[in-house]
Length: 231
Image (cartoon, rainbow, N blue to C red; front, side, top):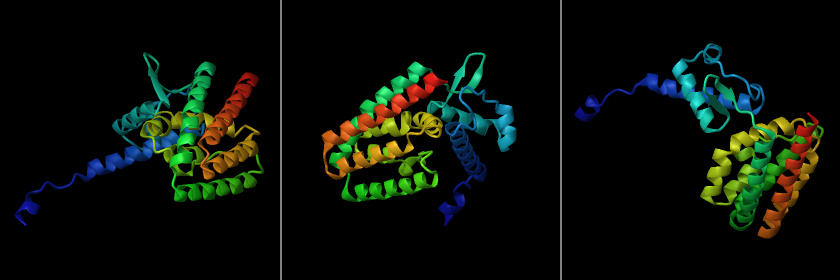
């Protein structure tokens, strides 16, 4: 009893502050990924603090986390801005993605459990219904476990790949997948490619899984290249 009485009370203000920062971070991250805050936009701390009714300290912490996710960058005398990748930088990321996700697909075909594969089949079926509702005009997946690619990377069981593709590059890639995917007519083709890839994983064929993933991402890259050159 004496020990309980002598323990310091929990600081509820700190808990609220952490919750507000997390919520603000999630809100800003989604807005950047989905293009509500466009690439190259200046991050105005006073405006965002007023708009979201948060302290400048909480806002700065959220912006710092966005920097770590490579969605925001700070430049001397210019302040914080939403990242803008050059054509060359974007293509380089797709080249890295092709190699790493190809490896992830190979490992997933070897390492995913039967339950994980069944869950992936269910997820892909749900994606099919969503594409039908969009009349084949868009195919953008929600983040994390609702993302087909994310599930495959997790299924590789390789922690280095998971760290690179599900943390370091994930949200930057999602930003461009969203912005180009929502304007692309490749939705049905991309969905069909996911089906072929899943069949290779179901068949426990690592070589075919890697080949199909590489082809899938290469097709996405070529689509992005075409759209960039048209602008």
